[in-house]
Amino acid sequence: MERKKIRWMLGLLSLLLCVSLLCFAPARAEAAAAGVIDRVLCSLNYEPVVMMELQYVNVSTSSANASITSAYWTDASGNTVSGQFGKGTYTLNVHYAANTGYSFAQGIPGYINNKSDGVTVTVSGDGSTALLQKTFSAIIWTPTSLKDPVSATVEYDGWTSFAVSSMYAESHEWFIMFPNGVDGMEVEQIGSTFPTLTWSGEDTERLVLHHIPAEMDGWRVFCRHWSVDHMTYADSKMATITVINIPTPEPTAEITPVPMEVPVQEPETTPEPTQEAEAAPVEPVTPEAPIETEAPAPVERSFTVSSDGNAHWRVYADNGETTAREEHLYVWHETRAASAAEDGEETGVCAVCGHTVTRALPYAGETSRYNFGIGDALGIDGLSDIQLLLIGGAAVCVLLLILSAALSPRKRSRRRR
Image (spheres, helix red, strand yellow):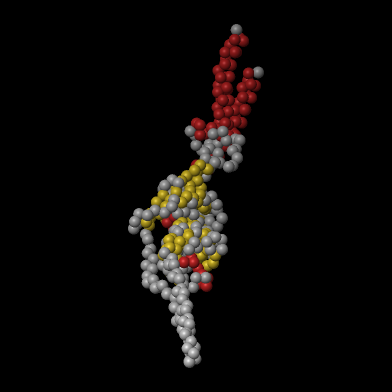
C-alpha cells in the first residue's frame, strides 16, 4: 500500500515538473531576444499650430534601451523649419540610437502619444539607428486677445490712439460703436458720420484717430482679431472716448432798429420822403481753428513674459509696465502610460509662456484576475504568476514526498515490532 502511494505521488510530481518546464519556454525566448528593440515611442506636447513658435513644441521618448539623438520639422518641400509654423503640412523627424548591446528590429512599429496612425519607422541596416516620421496638417486656433484698448480722454479736434495685442491672429478689424455699445460700424464707414475725422491703422493692432469732433463724446471702439482662415475671431473689450474742452459757440449779433425821425412839415414846402437806412449785416465770428499736431509714429515695445503657478503676464522693457494676469492655457499630453500597478502621468504646457505642470493619469483598463504580483513581491523578474505558482506547487510536492519517504521506515519498523 505504501508503494502505491509513493508511485502516485511520484507520478503527480513528474506531471507538475513537466508542466513547469513547458512554462519556462516563453521566458527563455524573451531572454534570448533581450537585446532587440521591438517598438519606438515618442511623446509630443503640441501638433503644428499656425503661428506657433517651434520652441514651444517638445519631443521626448519613453522607449526602453534607446535615446533620441535629434528631432526637427520639415515643410512640404523637405526644408527644415525654424521660427513659426505656417499654413500647410509639416513632417516630424525623430532620430533614435540604440543603447550598447541593443538593436532595432526591422519593420518595428512607431507610436506618437500612444497612437500609430501615419507613423513610419525606418531602421538602418545594422539596426543601430532608427528614424521615426509623421506628417501633420497645421492646426488653426481661434485667436486669443491678450491686451484690450484703454479708454481715452481727448481734447476737441485733438487726436488719440488705441492699442491691442493678440495671439494666433493674422488680421485685425476696428469698429466704432454708438454710446449704447450695441450699434456701430467699421472704421472705414465712419467718414459719413464724422466728416472731419481722419484715421490710420484700421487693420493693425494700433488705431489712431485725428480731428475728433465734439459729437464723438461717449462713443466706443473695439478690435476684432481674425484667425488665419478668417473663420473664427475674438473681440477685445470696448474703450470709451471722452471729448473735453469743447468750445462754446458765440451768439450771433442782433441788428438794432434805428428809430425814424418825424419831419416838421412847413406849409410852404412839401417835405421830401426820408429813406430808412438799411443796417449792414453782421457776419458771425468763426473761432480760430486749432493747430494740427502730427501723431507720433507707433513704437514697437519689447517685452518679456513672466509667469507663476496660476497665471502669466507681460513686462515691458522700457518702463517695467505689466499687463493684466491671464490664466495659463494648458495643452495636455501623456508622458507616462498608466498600468494596473501604478498611475500614469500627464504633462500640461502653457501655449503662451511654456509653464509646465503634471498630474496623475488613472489606469482605465481592466486588471487581469490572474495578476497577483507574486513576482514583484519576491523580487523575481521574467516569470509570470502562473509559472511561479506551478513551481511552488512542485516544490511542495517534493517536500511532501521527502517527508513521506522519511516516515515510511519508521512505520515499517513499528509494524514489525
